Length: 327
Length: 289
Image (tube, rainbow over all chains, first blue to last red; front, side):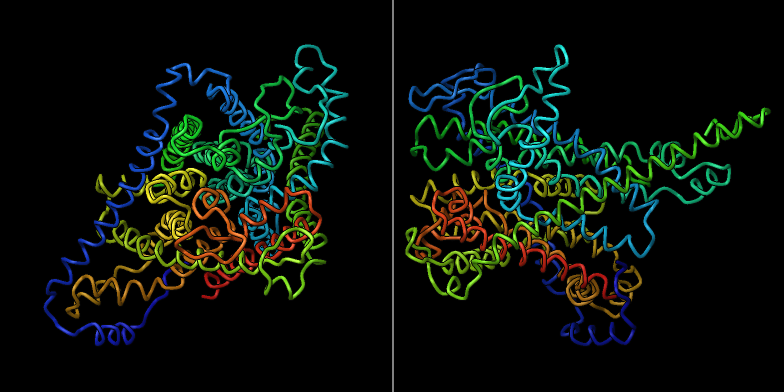
């Protein structure tokens, strides 16, 4: 993707058009101001998002006190609100999604960088990137109408009859009725974040100097041993950064989750039971809540909490990716 | 690796070791291939589902009829028009801002504290949950002005466009060779003319790719429109509630009426084809060189 090289002739032509006046005039100052103003605008934008979400949520924070964070209540009729259940659903569905997506993404990146022939590399790489382009709502419909029935007919009974029989951890995999569940949401999320994690891993794997890999191959290492002992240690920081980027994406995913999670305000030990997430709860209830009501404020407060969680995760991701980048 | 380095005196043990290492290697290759097949399979499954369920409803009528009550033969024209208008306006507002921010980062900011702060914030916005952008625009443009509007929807989309354009603009401008800038400056061009007439021109394809990717992204966005443009059973306008394809799909997919669900699938097929086409187009532009 190197910048297109212009010939001197083209530069001259551009210059001839540009050279209305040789002296720089006020143009430079104005352009510089515009550029700085645009930069400042982005900072202002993020600041405004944080402040407005917090202000919107303030009445709910005031009404419930610090207990808002740990209260499982969510009742628009009695106006009792708490964040515990939706935060739990958000974190559990996203972490489950990562447990499924990380091995898959690593496999895809390994395949693309070490195994695929150059002819295969580009079409498969593009196809995986296209997974990231499919709109969230399409994942929701596919998840609801195609994936969820299949999961609950085949995968859920299988897991419930094997892992579900184990002592203690068995309750996590206890069978539950219905197609919608945290597990279904996690599977859909895992497919959605897979391309982001795989693309980051592929890009950082390609930054490993080939001399390192060639040395290891020269010592007689197999492809897997080179990946395990040379590539992964070299790129560890960025790989974790890529995984955090996937986590940040999963936490705030809205439409797809709303379709498949069941939207029930309850914490169940089983991952096959329905639940909700901050994003799905806000999407479902926001337009029903009256202007100025405590309900609306509580939804804003949830939005603020989601923003803080995603901000922290994305900030860590960025720091790791920056730290891991070759200098 | 230590296994490969340690001297092996017993040839039988050496053979066993080599077989074991080859087995591990083979297993890794098989598992990685399976992972790739799973990822590609998911994409294929999604596309096949869309085609099988969406194609039967793809009739010319849906492009010229507005959404109607169930059973009365409605179409999607208002949703399609609404989506086009909001996407176009969102792109038109977000692109110049993103372009200027990208220019600032590449040409003026360098490694300064402010520049790094803008870079950091822009990257956070790039991955921030889009539903929160919807909440933000709701509290800025909907609640104070007493109503949902297509304009608010377009502004929510513009906020999503900005960081995408920033990222590609900065990356592409950084690839413009220094010699090119030096040549322009040596010819006496002021800095801003160098940037606009030389750097932008050299980075044009890359910047265009960023804009196309932004269009593809916002065309399918649903969450930020739920609380801003809301949806409308007629055409509506930018000043009032306005329909959009993703929101209509969302409302119809979960309904109990067969013809609405059919329209949702057809809309889903249209939007996915559109978004994927723009994505492939954007990639071709970059590859053309």
